[in-house]
Length: 223
Image 1 (spheres, rainbow, N blue to C red):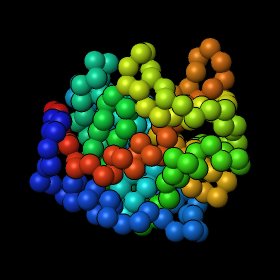
Image 2: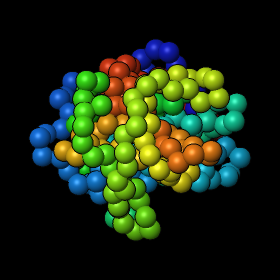
Image 3: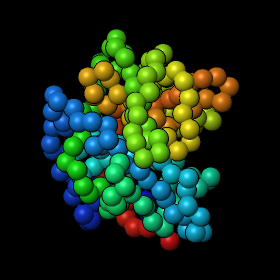
Image 4: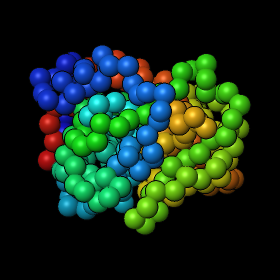
């Protein structure tokens, strides 16, 4: 797969452009099971990634993390993306935009028209409960966590992004899971969990709003 710093003439770009022009969501938020997508990435060497999650944030558009699509050197390494909904139904999913430094990725995904509203930057630190929606076996559960901070965070000294610092930990396959406000708005997308203490980080929703305003930058598969 090759990255392009220009607009690509593809259906993926058309989906991204459509999502940018439509106000996301309604006041009545959908159930987590309606917006979560399971992902598995087949690498160019034939080895499958352990999996991650994507969250629908617009018509035909889902948010996830960039690190699931790259190798240890940060280069794209994708042969095929396998996507299913919460019921196990197969979906067509294509990588439309990726920012490796901020760990942000957008997918063009077929299926349900349900999607989440993104919380504004001002709303991130509002009081209220926060829940992480996760796949567990064949079902979706919500795990209550505490919002401890909203601040710029980098991993290994690189790729600073605005992020939520949450209590508790998640498993590696939970990357891409949504952190939800008590009214169902999307606060952020889980990208890492601490090893020395019980903490989880989520990329703040405004980072994805900014990505939706940019043209697609993925041309074709890398192998």
